[in-house]
Amino acid sequence: MKTRLSRREWLAGTSLLAASTLLPRVRSAPSTSATPAASTARAPNLLFFFPDQMRRQAMGFVGEDPALTPHIDRFSREGLYLPRATSTFPVCSPWRGMMMTGRFPCATGITNNCNSTRPTVYLHRDEDCVTDVLHRAGYHIGYIGKWHLTHPHAPYIPQDIREDDVKWDEFTPKADRHHIDYWYGYNAYDDHLRPRYWDNNAPRDGYHYVNEWSPEHETDLGIRYLENAGGAMRDPAKPFALWMSLNPPHPPYAKVPARLRERYQGHSWRDLLQRKNVRLEGIGANARDAVLDYFAAVTGVDEQFGRVLATLDRLNLADDTIVVFTSDHGDMMGSQGLMSKPYPYEEAFSIPLIIRWPGRLAAGRTDDLLFGTPDLMPTLLGLMGQRTQIPRQVQGTDYADLLLGRPGPKRPDSAFYLDSTDGGHRGVRTHRHTYVTGLGANGEARVRLFDNENDRYQLHNLAEKEPALAAELDRATQEWLHRIGDPWPANARA
Image (cartoon, rainbow, N blue to C red; front, side):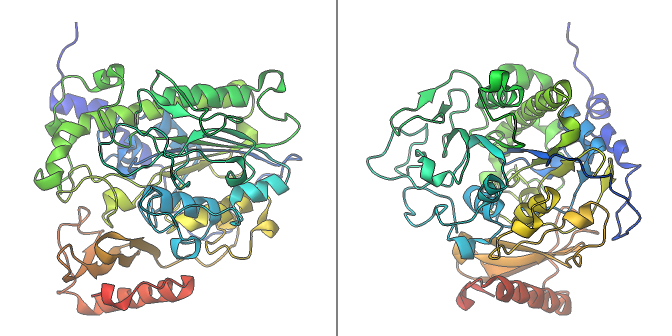
């Protein structure tokens, strides 16, 4: 018979207690003391595992949300954790475009989500992506799950459960897959309990449906790819690079198996919405009904990630495989009275990023590097021995040496932020402050400045009280705009 725990017992038994796992961690200075192990003869494999819309605070070991994530918690003790990793543009397609190309949206044209209303917004064939580089280096490349970089076009294929006229899902031809060898994916289809896919050789009308929760089904396929029975999934003579792109905990939140809700049984939204900036008003009121399903999906993602890690162990692949756990952006879930993602607040802008490479990246280490989305592509290539093959047009920075404990590039003083809402916003995140300028919903000039050290929930806007600091961070924002060639219009700025 199940008994109801008190709120104190619940918190003690979940991830808030797991915050103690942070105690051995120390901030990594740009030291040269770490000595990487000798390089293996074979190039490392890559497993890039990324759920959609999972905020950094929802990892149990962080000690902020009461989310149950035992496998991620263990993984954090085995890998390198970057708590200052940011989603440069916290929206699905722009993040994915930066992840693939190492370039900012102003360079790729992926300036918002790909859908039928934006015919010029998609990943172009002539972009030199991380998968193209790895193909030339002799890798077998797999991609499973959500792509969201293809433009839907008429005649439209059947869409998902959304009720508006905007089309989201689309077939991705082989010519647009950037040398991905094994493809099992879709563009944007949000029925998590009856997902739809195109497999490797399917034509546009050859999609199929699966009556299973999408993360579980995709993990089944990922495990088959890793097992590679009889060489059916990939060339066993080649190193592999596998992207596993899970849609949950992305909405619709309720599309989650009941067994995962049961992990939080007996606990109300009051137990789960613990952040002091939660306001259940306006759209933020939706968090009351969504939060249990959101955390249930997070726990389900953790469960599937654990299955993948166990498979690497079972197949003796763990030591030869770089594993990345991250997400494209977070979810406000009622904080600041908001839901979803395109915001500069920590709940949307701050993302999980843990990288494990046994014997090469020091286990259980934390590095407060201000790491932006365009840095993913060149840093991965640097770790995988492909530094000289990083395309010239890449705008991100290769931080592989810093992560390996070697002398490397200068550590940045800020990470760039941008979005396209209300005419657009631009700004920076430093180790201590967040600064964002742009227009409000009514067209008025708006500047936000938060001291994240003394005001972790970003409740107090210091822009008027600290004009000198605001001016300093505005100059840093202008330097970013100039560096990346962002033509953000002057009239969108405060």
